[in-house]
Length: 280
Ligand code: DHB
Ligand code: FE
Image (spheres, rainbow, N blue to C red):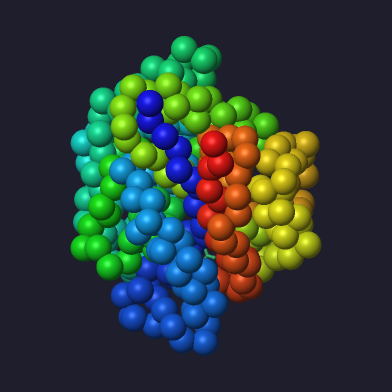
């Protein structure tokens, strides 16, 4: 049966792409963030996942305001990144596996998740940059990818608890797939940030750190909050932390924290990175 090895959660700000392009990952500003990936690189070399299932939010590249699904899965053999207007280099196509995607889509629909299936899907910085951070030395991403996009752009957004249920279902489906493939789960976004309005620049270290702790000891902790409450705690764009919840639920039960980094600021955000390993 397919196996879930672990979960990586990471911030995804576009300026990570600029830092990589300018080769300034080790300067005073970026060093503490990029260093958070060093233990993850070692772990990836040892565990060698075949597939990355990526919970992320599109910011207007593939879906615009006239057409926003709540949950959408890619089901193509490749996913293209295109210019999003941030001035960051476009990354090479990401490999997909349509059959594998369809297995997950079918499993989700059987479990009453009415997801959109996308046989063509462009992927934005929230998908591409965390993968680049995991495999910085590879010309293109070395694993098969499965994009799972959750709407955080246009209200109404799915609740934290619904995202948790989605992730849990994805984890169960993966573990029922008859194959030797080894899966890594990714959740990208957050942590606290607000890009506009009166609270622009808002950061909440206390909540972020409690949330990161809950990922290890009490994974469903944040599902107690409504989206309004979460936005009060972490800012309008900080709501992206629902990707972390979905990823953590997909990972399931007992886990070991391999590494955890929290650093403020990266761009306008509190940067969070975690690697949790699945214990069987
Ligand atoms: C920034 C943060 C985001 O989550 C994003 O999608 C784009 C920009 C930022 O802080 O610059
Ligand atoms: Fe974002």
